[in-house]
Amino acid sequence: MSTLELIQNLMTAAAPRPNVLFILSDQHNAKVLGHRSHPDVRTPHLDRLAAEGVRFENAIAQNPICTPSRMCYLSGQYCHNHGYYGLNGPHPEGLPTILGHFRRAGYTTAAIGKIHCPEYWVEDDSDYFRELYPNCSIGGCPEYTAYLTARGALEDRDDYRVPEHPEAVGVLDARASRLSYDDPREMFPQEYPQGFGELYDLEADPWEMRNLYFEERFQATVRELREDLLNWIVTTARPATVLWYNTEGYARIPDCRLRFHVCVNADGKVSPHGLRDLPAKIYL
Image (cartoon, rainbow, N blue to C red):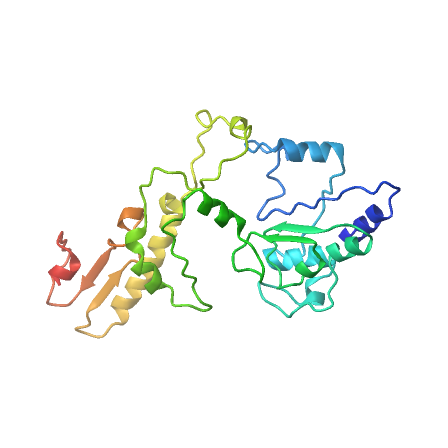
């Protein structure tokens, strides 16, 4: 059964017509639900929704990327019909929307949250439109930003927006001194609703983030690639070639802007198996 078939059934239901709320979440794996017996995640409201309604065990998204997936959902068409396979595509002039179907049936419609669809496509069929994704659509309103501003959390905010196809490294480097890597404040200052904090015992279940940098299998692959590259350079380089190798960064945030590994081989100029504690720029 398609989304549009479900909608048509709702709109032709006996009076009084129900209010209809569609909730779309980004990057939510189908197994990460309480009623799917996930060992850690607690989703009591979604579990209740599943228990009191119908679950579709074989539902498949038409695209793994947010914008084309929502385009399919909101229009009832495949990607090869509406033309969106990524974040950009043709303007969907004349393309129907779920909201338009409801509106023609006499409903008042609204779209709130991360819509992230082509400009004015969803807005034209919405009586109330609030876009939370900044600069996504003309007329969009980044309400979370407004919330932070009201709390005084963005008093020193830099509203610079990187243009399309940027050379962003210079912008980031220029603002590196503003990076707070030891800030005691919470990353997301908006408080979660009361009750959700009690679903998990953080002391009993300390869940460490996975870090491939420290996994032996990952490091073994990295070492093998480095050794193959260095062996190729050494065996194919011309005599008296100066070889210089450095990594792109370090593991810890405080060091990542300054520290990296450097190896130099200049035949007759540096001693083999050497180790220097001085900064490379001073030593060389």
